[in-house]
Length: 283
Image 1: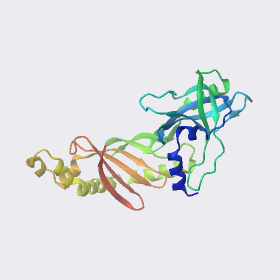
Image 2: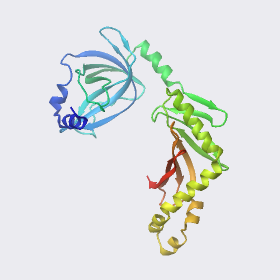
Image 3: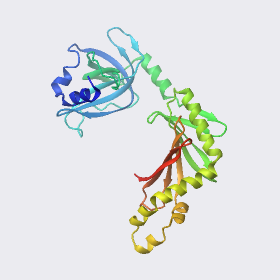
Image 4: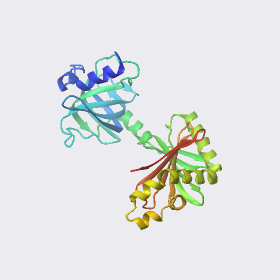
């Protein structure tokens, strides 16, 4: 089956068909809910998911150290039947997902359970409590040039701050904490940009001005104000606020607009290898 056909069939599933894709047998598990989730629209309902880090099978007592998700049907997004809080241990009655063949290109199914009933919130489970305590510890990188970088579990990126052209800006390494080589590459790429900051700062401003000055004039509240907006004044007015770097050397640089677009963000993207590629007004 082709991926597009697979996705179409999934989206056409009725709630009954979707629930029938789980085992009839109910079981009890204890999950360590960490963060993340959301809904996918199906045929007349939403397939809603909350992610968990690990779980314990109550029947066997076995600890399963693998991420997964607990799911439930939703007909009204404004009135969810369950609210699973982050970093919380839950005891649940569930039905496991039946085995399913997926086409190439589809994400493999992780451990996947349909919620039948929430039996207990803040359930006692020593193994999961120890894992939660470890999970809550901050992950911090120390770098001689980039300083302290703290991992944000929500966006799976490291964040910190540096001095750029005599001003403090935020930096983001868009790389997972477990990707050691990716962390090294992202740090190296950002340091390269930092070492040539005068050149990059001028080029980023110039590129944004060339692409967006005309649009800024259209946003101006009067002809007099528009006449004062030139590429030169545009480049001077915007202020660099943050840089996001990937392990491959691709970057997104964010500028405050000095109200050229009534407080919207200016984003300039590119890579160290290919140079600056785009500039847009966003947000």
